[in-house]
Length: 315
Image 1 (tube, rainbow, N blue to C red):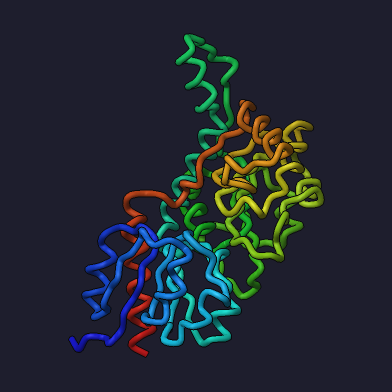
Image 2: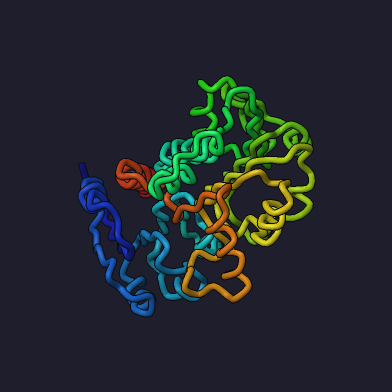
């Protein structure tokens, strides 16, 4: 194989397989996860490619002098830390890898739903405290429920596939009107999902336009009191409205893998009060943004990125 005459800078920690994978397609790799954000702009002009996770925001200023840069690869699904318009204006391709951790997210979301329905976290804490409370932990079954999925891309479909054996109805809504249906979910308008769902699960990317998409009007639109799952992005949800819904019973329980502010040391006093409620409420499960975080997805993300980079550079 004739090597590609390209070089790539990697500035975040990644599974070590990324280096030989890129080298196998002829790309010279400079793996520098220890770089400080202020050191990156001076280095970028040397490289044809940049691979990131979440260390920095990719802005117009950052790429101002990166005249050789042909692509930015985001090792994961979300690209909310990338100014896509700035890249497009410079003719720089944006590549991400939502296919790489979709299975991990699908499995994890199902796990959250089961844990929420069957009081797994609450019951575990009680038994460890020498409390053996069976009736108090009588739970719900997925069978017979209607599960609403908002966002039917890689993540939403992965969750729907895993629900297939539970004999439940799955309704999905997506902004993309041309989305192909499949055997795992019925694509419906949002008002139909509001009318019938017992559970709603978010699988949409965060954009400036959908901040607090799940706000007061959203939750009040559901005909039933619902269980709520979020493995997408915390900024999509108005956390204060979510808390009010939990207190009123409109939201019967919530499993949150993401929060509006995940830098817990920087919480404002108001955010601290909300977090204290969420962290001490028995019908809430909190996890630290690990839905796509499996040993297998760590490698799969690399495989997807490298495949897409190869296709891009091969023209």
